[in-house]
Length: 242
Ligand SMILES: Nc1ncnc2c1ncn2[C@@H]1O[C@H](COP(=O)(O)OP(=O)(O)OP(=O)(O)O)[C@@H](O)[C@H]1O
Image (cartoon, rainbow, N blue to C red; front, side):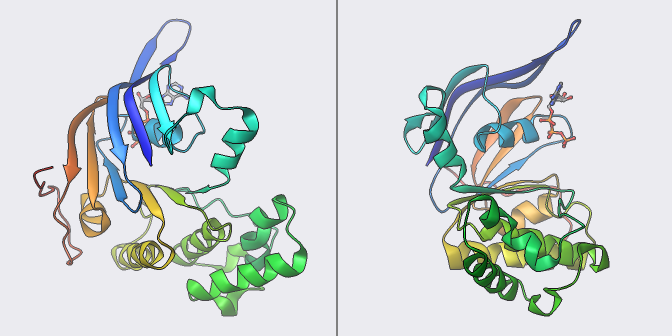
């Protein structure tokens, strides 16, 4: 579904050059829950930004559904972006809109009628178990509830790929588990490819099928891992032979 071939990306300022990604080659298959792990500053978010079409690499090839991204016309690229959704770490809900309006917003931006978008938004709100909060404002919610709403909003456009950047890093352990279980359910129910950046090995071990471990912008390890049905603190992954 997504393939990078020898992709590199650096950030240049007047005096410095930071190599964020160096020679990354990988494939993400349809239906994967693909994890990207590594210490702070190793290039996880940069990689996610490239994979989600928000940033272009400096060199190398990026194939999105077998099509070279750098040769796409603007309209083709937008079509691909429309098949994706992104969930951020910092709960980016709009605080002047109700929960239901927040969830329906991506559909409004796509010109969907009010009746249709509220209907779809309600279904998603029901899926994340917060239908009773539809008229509340985000300020009234807990961190876990806000993240559930972010998931509902990301799903309302029926994406084929869902990108998550540290979705549980500011949540406590019980709420983290709750959100990870919802992500698992999303994967099963909607058959979406999921790409998750996290520095929490326990989260990666709990839900990911294949994982990339980055070290200083390079691939340290890439392949399938053994899942654990117990969610407990861990600092290691059990890699399977690819
Ligand atoms: N827009 C930018 N301008 C300049 N340097 C950047 C930019 N974005 C990232 N970098 C640098 O590129 C490197 C990789 O950053 P990136 O944010 O991808 O790492 P990360 O693994 O996601 O880190 P963290 O876990 O702390 O979020 C870092 O050295 C960072 O300072």
